[in-house]
Image 1 (tube, rainbow, N blue to C red):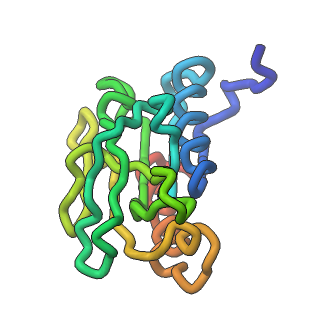
Image 2 (image 1 turned 180 degrees about the vertical axis):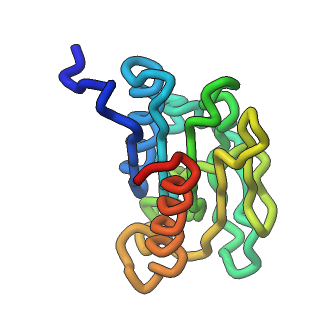
Length: 178
């Protein structure tokens, strides 16, 4: 049973990279489905979120999307997930998600462990999905750094940390958080 008094919670902020990114996505889904009232907003930011393809974790499939950046190695590709299926119609307006996909093989030894991408999001500018009111509820961008650098090297903060902070400010404004 939940020890949270949900009437006091206006919104939930979840941020994660790699497996922590998958945790942020799954935890948001779990809270929305099992505990949070329909008035709770979710701001989620993930960097090359890695969900287990072999278990279809968070709906990840074995289909891939190639990283479209000309500066990314040709081996960079991410496993597909249909974000619209993870955020059912009628709940999307309560979400403000940002994801940086990279597509680098995580282990570097060919085990096939990779981050995720929205299905079909293979354009240079990434992609955006709209909610029931025509507002963006999911935005994805592509990066060309190594997976480990995306989550650990602050030399890439202009592509990771800065967009996350900007995204969270946008979510705050969208939801009217003070």
